Amino acid sequence: MEKNMNIRQIAIIGVITAVICILGPLSIPIGVVPISFTNLAIYFALYTLGMRKGTLSYIVYMLIGLVGIPVFSGFSGGLSKLVGPTGGYIIGFIFMAVIGGWFIDRFWDKWYLSLIGMVVGTAVCYLFGTVWLAYQAHMSLGAAFSAGVIPFIPGDMVKILIAAFAGPQIRRGLIKANLFKVSL
Image 1 (spheres, rainbow, N blue to C red):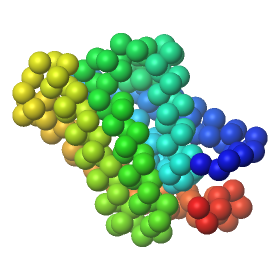
Image 2 (cartoon, rainbow, N blue to C red):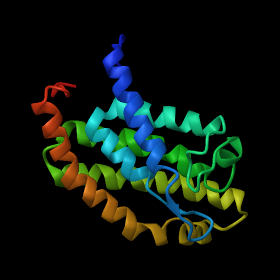
Image 3 (cartoon, helix red, strand yellow):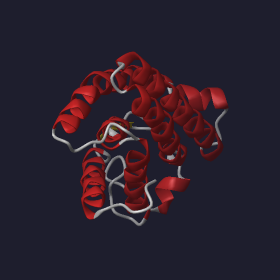
């Protein structure tokens, strides 16, 4: 992270955090783990801000939710969400942002490499979420994987594809408007 962020950079992080706060609560309940738009918002944050600031934006969102503001899926919030069955996914999103962001920062103009980074980051998020879900819900890892990963793969792949194709267009526009520096 840059030693001194200016007010403009902090404001942009705040705006992107607000976007995550708007999309994060929107979810489709399908069981213990709802379909959430948080990961799509994070992918766009990474294209918009880069790995470091995009991850910071997610962490600020997470902290907003942890203090009780209802920004998590299903308009929920509070520490109970983090220690509940879906808490592993909330933590896993940090690693998804770092891994996906690393690939996006280096290969943003090569959609297939950015896509690989988002898939790997999502897989790591799934790992954290599955282990925590199994522990919290007293399920086997297989049962947790079946409940917390399998139903989400098709939708998450669609979200990754949307981000892989729209994200570079967003970044190109930001670069053209001199709002994003290519050298990271």
